[in-house]
Amino acid sequence: MKVIVNNKEIVLKITDNFYKKLSGFMFKKEITYALRFKTNGIHTFFMKVNIDVVMTTKDNKILYIYKNLPKNRIIIHKNVYYTYEFPNNYITNLKIGDTLKIKE
Image (cartoon, rainbow, N blue to C red; front, side, top):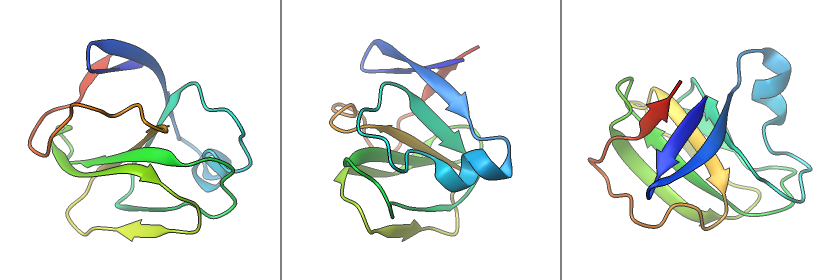
């Protein structure tokens, strides 16, 4: 699965079990793919690098964008269905209200 951002495709991995949801990008020094969590909140504890985060509705309409999010943060929003994590500085031209494009 891939997600298309700024006309670039990046591999999208789905966090579909407890371990994947818990670990995410923790302890990673280099990030080359994106993650999708079915959750309305994340944390960046134990992160080695900053990340970009996009929070969407069930239809992938963007509600919140966090660029260059540093470690030791918690983000929670009630109306979010999916949370996407990207490598740092990957999100450049997305705006709130845009829709993320997912390619199977």
